[in-house]
Image (tube, rainbow, N blue to C red; front, side, top):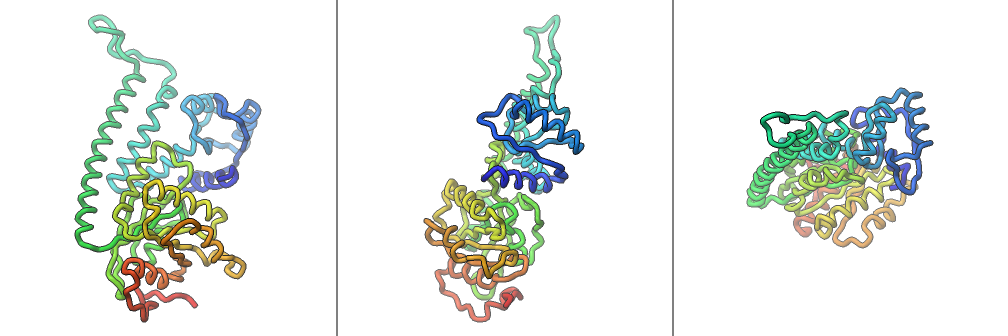
Length: 366
């Protein structure tokens, strides 16, 4: 991801979190300084901050606790980095108990090394006559409390994880196949799930609309029913403290019989986004699973000049067992073709597809 594209994505993240972006600044450095920026650029940033009246400054790269503290001392406003912004977004979106626990754990782990900056002086607790040792500082007390909280959250999450594993195991016994939706954030996965099921999963033009996995049953008269699961959107530069939380939401892929990789074909960086998803699927060991590449939002591109075939070929290069379907989830175009492809993948093509256009009351547009 180049600098401009990364900033554009940061802009989307900030707006999704409820911020109003009023300006931006870039600098190329061989290595970050103790304030991350060079002296001249820091002065320029301070001037820009005053000019536009900014009360929060967001850095695209992860700041060390010292860098964050030094920047706030110079700029006199709140300074956060991309990691803190994504954590805030996840906190807004989490709905289930597990999701909230995962975010709470990630935020707490993010806070721990940054406690030093929370205190302008150290207070002694428990010291004095009749005690052994000098007691402990407030920051040491807080660190101990936070470490205890981290351990408690991990224990609670382990219990929830066991419950979810039992639920998945019981679901597997039913023999109903699972189709999982994956894709870069804002690719249109939730819109697709809604279009196929008539469900009311939150589907908005914002990043991380879906955080907690959502599963719906698909009834179709031309094949056996199957379950469809919507997962959290992928993103680059994922905070290290959120990796575990992110991976936990993708455990649903373990039982997936088929993966639908949804790509926003209208996005200028669609190929790069698809590569991010493919790399993570490979990391999780799911890159060899049966899958369908779903090129979404075809209604937003000029199809006369857009070489969809070549585009699909580039996206599926070096990958086997991948079909390609072009759709518009918003316009409900191409859904009959998608259902046909899903059924063929799940049943090795042993299905009669006459009148498939009537499926779920959806007809492809001419």
